[in-house]
Amino acid sequence: MGSAHIDRIGQVKSALGFVLVLFCLLSCSQALAAPADISGLRVSLPEPASGWRKAGKGNLFMLQKDFPETEDDKRGSALIQITKPLLAARNSLSAGMKTFVATLPDMAKEDILIKHYGVTVNGHDIRVEERCCVHQNNVGISQIVVGIAGDKQQAYLQLVLLNLNGDRSKSAEADFEALVRSVKLDPSDKDFDLVPAGGDGGLDGVFTHLDTGIRPNVFGGMDFYSDSEISMFDPKGLFSTELPKGGRTIAEHCKATPTDCGLYKLAGGGFFSSARSIEMRSVTSPYGTIEIETKSFAEKGKDLVISDADYRAVPPFDEGATLDGEWVYSFASSGMTATSSGSVASSHTLTLHKNGTFERSGWSGASMTNDIGGSQSGVTTSGSRPGASGRYRLSGYRLDLIDQSGKTESMSIFEPDKSSDGLLVINGDNYLRDDGQ
Image (cartoon, rainbow, N blue to C red; front, side, top):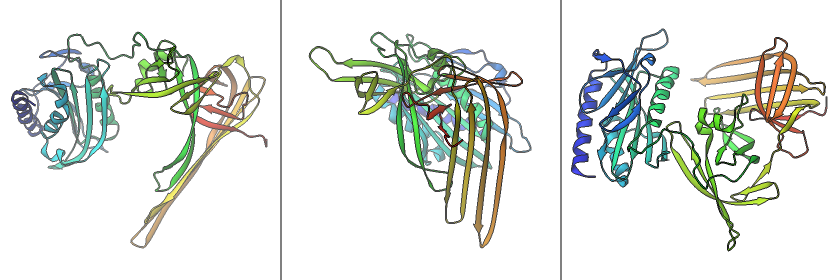
């Protein structure tokens, strides 16, 4: 990293220290328009109505949003800092991130809780690191740092959360994520969007892969899982790992929920080679990080084989199709530690009739015990879900439930087993047919 780059980061460090000192004192602020040019770095800022205001002076562009004290939360603030573009080679991004994180020396000592690596839609390298939590003068501080590097210059952005958690933290993070996705480091950069390029695409349809295994739960135990994972391919080059809801197209779904989606292209399989591969460019975080994986690929009839795993073609339901039977979704999880134990269970039943009517019901329950210093305490709770009935409508991969009041609930649905309704996957949950009714 060049000396000019280090000097500029040093200026950033001084400015950040100044910001933290002024946490409770900042009063000079002004409303912002959404578009901004920061010495050549183009970004879309939060709208003024969202509560963000420009704050402070110095080498950093800074925004502040204050949150009032409530019965449940202390007064808090969120600070966004953005550097001017720094002249530096692409391969110095990792070193630059370490230097920028160190602008909050105590935070640099904390382990990285969440990190994302990849490229942006414009081909720049991007790294995201989240750290928590440092306490200074009764102020809890957490930090999210983002570095974006092109071939000749870099930019760093930071969100500092002061006494924020829960929904207040999530709202500030969502604004920061959208800002990061909007960053244009070079004049030729385009807005964040998943736009297929020439050579992308080549598949069409919905495919499912059965993933099974065990994973830890919140009670300290292990749960068995069996998930019918979805891959939906658009012939132009979009793919999604979730079925669009509410009648959306895959393009509309990916625009609204990019972390479900990505771009793909097929390669190989020409006259001189039978080997084929699929390149999948997945959006792996709300910051717009894209990870690229190249996997082996083959077609087996109407089905696919990706990385030696079978993906079965899932046909859509015909418009106006009906089913006849009762399907049950059940979930249970339990475990224990040295001082506590707990469990949770739930069950949902959906009955679909050939005449187009439905009924559904359900229940859930949970229990928790703690043993501290020889004293044991616990809680048990359970409840039933209010029953509902009405008419249903099947079309494609969509199930609409219309209750007696006329309210419609739309859900995704598919049959993972060919020519069998023994298992329905509804909104991602496995509903097994109950033939003992």
